[in-house]
Length: 118
Image (cartoon, rainbow, N blue to C red):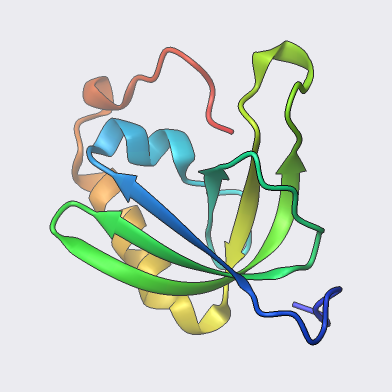
């Protein structure tokens, strides 16, 4: 994942609760190697910055180490929400598998999201 662009600084901590499969599909970044997720936040982050996240899925919480791979600043065009896309650390492969299993078990008609994923 490369060096952290902000060495010496404590990684930021984010909390994200995803209540249902539709929301999970909306926030999950399947195109990111090792899996990733969009975290809505007004906090500005740098690409490559290490972050920690507590991700609540259904009845389980996962503590995740990740790196910022995508940013969407406040007031971006197209009314996109401010936030960051993070790539899970390769050690978090079980989380990627868990998310993909949850998404694969849902009927396709329930996964229709009126807006595109981030």
